[in-house]
Length: 272
Image (cartoon, rainbow, N blue to C red):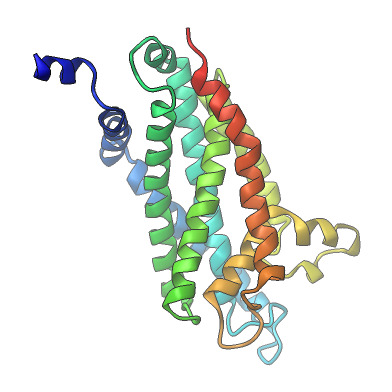
C-alpha cells in the first residue's frame, strides 16, 4: 500500500529529477551538447582572429590597456556563449508550449513550479558546458586567470548567475510564444545588437561620443567589466573588484530576475 502511494504521489524532488532527465537526455544525441561546445569555438575564432592585430596595436599602449586582447575579449566569449544557451532555452520552452506539454503538466498532479525548475536545471546544465568550453578556448588564445582561486570562483559564479538570469527571461518569452522558430529569431537580433554595441569587443571610449554612454552602461558591457575585474590581468587595465565595478553588473542580474520572476510564476501557475 505504501509503495503504491509513493508511485502515485511522487515527491517534488523526484518529479523535478524525472523532468530534468527528460530534458537533458536528448541533448546527448540531438547535437545540443555539441552546439554548446562549438558555439564558444566559433565566437573565439570569429572575434579573435580578425580583431587581434587591430586591437593589439600599438603594442606599447593598445586601446584596451591590458596585457593582451585575449584577456580583454574573454568575458565576451563567455557572454555570447551564454546568450546562445538562453536562446536554446527559449526554443525549448516554446516547443513545449506549442506541443501542449505545459498544458499536460498543468492537468497532472505535479508541483506548480516543478516544470520551470526542471527547465532551468537543464538550462544551467547547458550554461555550465558553454562556460567550460569558453574557458578552454580562452586558454588556447592566451587568456589566464590572474587573481587567484577566490576570484576565479567568483568569475565562474557570476557567469552562472548571468546565465541563469538570461535563461529565466528566455524561458518566460518562450513559454508565452506560439512559434519556436520566430522566438529564436526575435531573440537573436537584440543579442547581436547589444553584443556589437558593447565594451566587450573594444573599449567604450572607441565609440562615437553620442553613443558612448549607452555602450558603457548597457548590461553586456557591465557584465564584461565585472568579469574582467574578477579574471584580473598582469596590468591594471582589468579594473579592481570593488563595489563601483561589481555593483552595476550585479544590479543588472538582480534586475533581470526581479523583472522576469513574476512572469515565470504567472506562466507556471496557469492551469488548462
